[in-house]
Image (cartoon, rainbow, N blue to C red):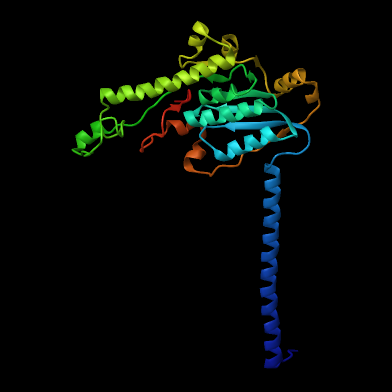
Length: 305
């Protein structure tokens, strides 16, 4: 039997259903917002400096550029009373001169306060090796690729293509050395000499840094700073690293050098994640991509070059 509902009653119940649906939507929205805040806070806490006495672990991966957030984290690590030492894991083919210098200086500030051990992964070459010598002790795998101690400055040129296409660029410059080199002009002897001077001066800084940090000079220093790469075993024989092993080897060295470090847990310090750009996703192969704009400056490039 069907019960008839008068229009007033029907409208009353329909309005209640609409109100219930609206309130359900806002309740769901509020719950989702609260959950997002909780998850965000948890991720922030997880990515922050760990508490309690410990040995810090930090990973340097990929191409090394200047990074303000990385420097800020390293400054916090240097000042931390909880982090008694640092194990720096390096898996990098190199990077820019300035980025590598910035990282090295920050690591030496940490080493002034607490021991730092560098542990090389698959590759720690060029700027990656600069990061390694920022530590007090260097450990490599037997098959780690390291070295590549040198500087390279390169750029694309389109002069041949432009001539073929019948395209030219008119430029008015205050001198022949202004805006040189350029993709659109052949490099003059004077400009080439000026760029060579930059590369040579920067290489001298790199070479002297290796000599100072690794106590190398004369033929021994010359033999390892000609741009060649080494396996971990070769690097050990050449005096570029102190031993072969892994993180356990690093912990053992720390404990042998300071009894207060015994039985401390190794805790992760996490660098802020960078934007997931196209070049960032390419990781180690980023240096191989031609740049259509002027390069930022001389780059300490990798053996992947």
